[in-house]
Image (cartoon, rainbow, N blue to C red; front, side, top):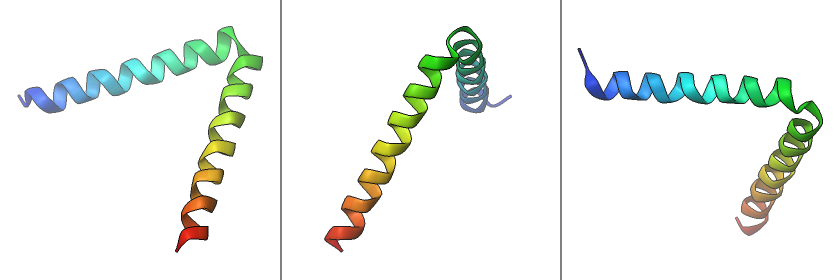
Length: 52
């Protein structure tokens, strides 16, 4: 029984359940968060690409 792996699995499951719960309780807010996350992510990648 690998304790570290078990803790990691519990955290992943908890995050997935939390995300699903959030998506179903607040779809509009979720869409806004996802859009903000991806625009931030792409902005970050563009910034990295522009520097190199």
